View 1 (cartoon, each protein chain N blue to C red):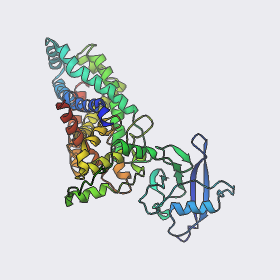
View 2 (cartoon, rainbow over the protein chains, first blue to last red; view 1 turned 60 degrees about the vertical axis):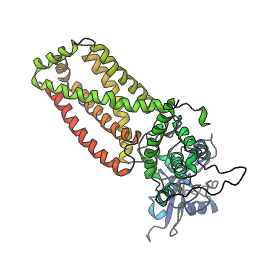
View 3 (cartoon, rainbow over the protein chains, first blue to last red; view 1 turned 180 degrees about the vertical axis):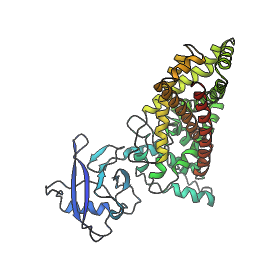
View 4 (cartoon, rainbow over the protein chains, first blue to last red; view 1 turned 90 degrees about the vertical axis):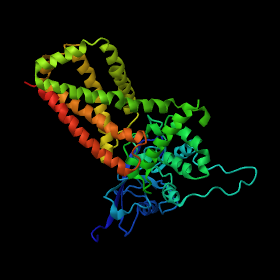
Amino acid sequence: MAEQKTIRLKIRRQDGPNKPFHWEEFEIAYREKSNVISCLMEIQKNPVTASGKKTTPVVWECNCLEEVCGACTMNINGQGKQACSALVDQLDQPIVLEPLTKFPLVRDLMVDRQIMFDHLKTVHAWIPIDGTYNLGSGPRMPEVKRQWAYELSKCMTCGCCMEACPQVNSRSKFIGPSAISQVRLFNTHPTGEMNKHERLAALLDEGGIADCGNSQNCVRACPKEIPLTTSLADLNRETNKFALDQWLRK
Amino acid sequence: MSTTQSPYHFLIRRVHSILGLVPIGFFLTFHLILNLTALGGAKQYDLIISTMQSFSGIFIIELVVIFIPIAVHAIYGTWVVYTGQVNILSYKYARNWFYIIQRISGLYTFVFVIIHVYLLRFGEANFSALSQFLSQPLGLLFYVLGVLFSIFHFTNGLWAFAITWGLTIGPHSQKVWLYTLGVVFVLLSAIGMSDIFAFLK
């Protein structure tokens, strides 16, 4: 540990969506317990590459710095991770930083994850409780259900599962594991269950649950350890029952 | 939004899934087992083939039970392969390998079945015709890969089938089903290799 005097980073730079990209290497002084964000902040103070060339500060996003907001998700040594909880001491050097590939690039390490929020709208990932009068309190949720549903609620829409999923790409309309798992969360809630049919119907469409390829990368990539593949399999059962039922009632 | 959706996309994916087992998977298993009769020699094998070909309406049965389901499964499957992506270099997980091999084996089996049917169903369907083809090293390799890839595609497909139909939901049941299918793969492969061995002189 004592010999490691510097931290080396290799960052993919791109000034805008349609601009060419290039790589830049940086070398900064070693500091104990650094994470990728603190390295990026260090580069921002003095944006000079390892070869001594002056450059622009690297653009990235971050908010919470405690792995709950998902904003700083980027490819770190090839895999999608949060830069705030990616500790330098646990990473191979040079630390290779790239933007997520499944979302439109804004600049350098910053991408636009809007599509994930659009997918949440597609699957109705909320519980409609607004009315013109007080609806009163809803039904109680059984404790056993609450325990596993809480795990699903940890999703921060960071995009790690989208990045790892081979079925999410420019040739496919697959909405990805996170939005599908949210259907399970809201369908489990006793009040949310009242609008179950709307969410299941959305999953039958193109890009819905049938586009899952069962590579199961998502469950390995999820930083919050959400049982995404269990949600997918459970909703396969639910959508099959729902689709058959709908058809038989036609 | 949900009221204007048509569930045809969901339906075709589910049809694609079920065709893999009924009838294609059952036919594959039957075909592999029936060909063990070749171990009894050329005479016995040719007799069975000519008896089956003499059934009236065999062509209609072959068309409806074998040809059309395989064509639908293979053509739609090729589209499914196109909509996927290879990311094994970043995510080196066993299941990600299976995802890729499932697609490679599917495409290989598509080509293999076309040539296999062209040679033996529309060509000369007898013991010596296949025996001659397998006497060439490349012909033998083509068949060994064809048999192993089609069995892999079937057994690994059954693993995904259980998820698609909501049978194995949790990781434990999926693992138990994986090991069970591993045994099925070995058994069917042993049968398939015996079939090929029967045609080697």
